[in-house]
Length: 351
Image (cartoon, rainbow, N blue to C red; front, side):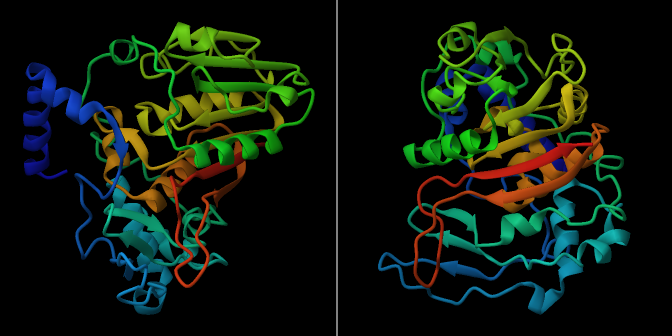
């Protein structure tokens, strides 16, 4: 991170502490439009070809595969630079051998939101990790810093009985989760709240649905939870309430961007999952900006998929078959761009 970025964060943090109105403006939930700090330089990260959508939905320029211009290996090096490391450059060629190409992004000038084209999320996670070095070994120490460093217990003190994505994304999330669990499963909903997005009829057939979250009122209002606990994973990432190999499925919905100790958390997830158990990490582009870590706010959705994949690969939790999938609803036609809030998932299987 540059000295200017350090200064900016210090100034903003001071403002947040002393000016409540400004704090409220910055801490309300919003979409992440573009990288806000640690912007990759043109030499570090190749730019994508971009489709700009006019009000009449006609593209000004044609999106094309950035691999055609710079090569897959160079493209993925740029993606890795978002983690603040140069250690992975030597293994970029190996990752470049993936089967699916990653395409450009699309920007809607009416909203300023940059969204991935079809196939890009899937291509963000390598098919073969054997030659991929751990990006966190040499990552910037501020990768998991945040603008608001007050305890999360303060931020989540008041319950929020609201959805954090639009109705369409809620529907997609509920359908995906309900199709990913089976009757008799034991499920842990990490960073849980008043809703777990599990069909209530299916929930009755589960052996157990446990919730771990930050607000007791939200958790006790969740109709599908069989048990729950209040715990701040940023203070204590250990899942000591749960025995080894005690869950079939672990869910983490719309909260991975707030974890300051993600490697520790996912290592614990690996411990409590049964052999062959599955973890599903779902995320969108909406967040409380002041509570998201720097490595997340400095990237786009494709970077986020790669980052979550790295969490699972390098946490020591024994995960394999790490995959990313774009669950978003797309508009048909020439652009095939995402409509409504996007939704993505990165999944893995415990060895």
